[in-house]
Length: 105
Image 1 (cartoon, one colour):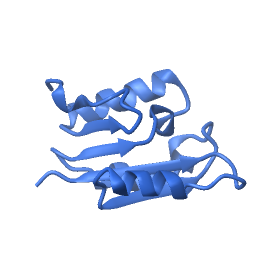
Image 2 (tube, rainbow, N blue to C red):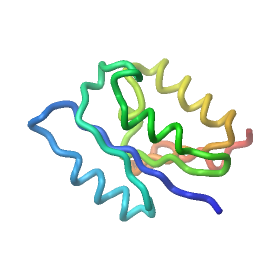
Image 3 (cartoon, helix red, strand yellow):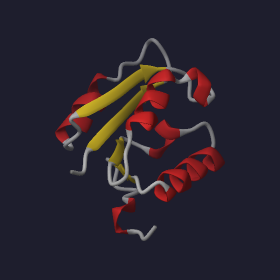
Image 4 (cartoon, rainbow, N blue to C red):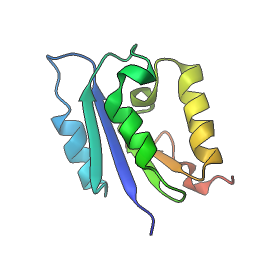
C-alpha cells in the first residue's frame, strides 16, 4: 500500500509549521514530520528530515509544501530527488511544481 508521508520545516522560532502540517494532512499525509531548523542546516542537524527519509519505503510518496524544505541548495535538493527516485520513492510538492509519480525509475 502506498503511503503519503509529509515533511514540514520552518527556519526560525518565530515561524510555525502548523499551517504546513495542516496542508500536508489535507493532502493525504497520515504521518507528518515537522521541525524548526535553519534551511542552511546540514542533514545531520535535521533529525526530523532524517527520520522522515528513513521511514520511506518503495512506492511511498514524500510530500512537502515546497522543494526548498528538502535541502540547503539546488544541488542538494536535486541530488535528494534523484536518490529518492532511485529508491522507488515519489516526491510531490503542494505548490504543484513537482510530482515524480509520472516519471520512470
